[in-house]
Length: 358
Image (cartoon, rainbow, N blue to C red):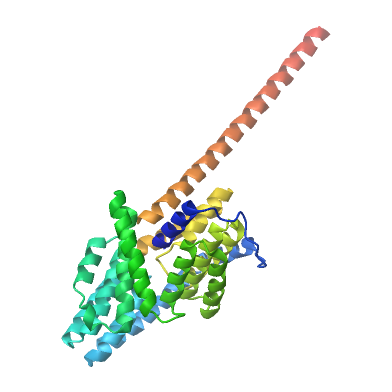
């Protein structure tokens, strides 16, 4: 998501975007915010359901004697943990590699190393990601493995480019990111999740926002509500509206994305945190703080460290909250001063009147 935001920022510098976007979609933001609040209250139930799935899958793995079937179950566990708890996801990715290696399945070993590399780069472990990718035997990969391999390379190159402060290094890694994105597009199945989000990247980088919205329509229709895939599609749609400066639709699609992720017990939260920042800017400080605190708790469950893209929204919300509190304090002081002045005037008036009566 951070790489996608960088692309949008670059595109904004490159040209002027329309001031507004016309939309025939009606939105009820308050109703959506209430649904998010209710989902946050029910979050323990969603977490319990994911834990139930994990427990059932883990039990199957423990009782499975066939190594080939064990590989498949271990991959299921990795996918269950991937957006939920990073340390466990890393553990099962490594188990997948070990089991595939015992079968001498270098195609699977390479794909699982690529999946592990991607998981590492999403949590700022860039050196570990590069280490895994350099161990992959690319020639052994099938089409699915190549998608994961190129996708992992694309992601880590974008991450390194976003972190460095050296201009020439940044340009080099962004160029590599673009090249690997092209490679993914060449091997990914059209209308797959990878294809959709990378095609959206390309259209947004070219500032073809209406085309991006049309593609987003197809993506949204493809994914079922209350899934992590639907949340991802909604997040990308919100970013298109962000460049079109349609503030209501930005908040609407961030809300839809956040709601799906909460119901899926996704701990790797981004949409809710960005939504909280928008609400803070709108002056809805109480709701912004609640959403921010829940999102922060989720992210710390996923990975016990704040990642770079999470820090600025949190700081901004806290600053807005402090400003709001200070404004309230100043208002109370002004009112108190006004009351005191009025009382003094009243006392002075009474004193003058009594003195004249004497």
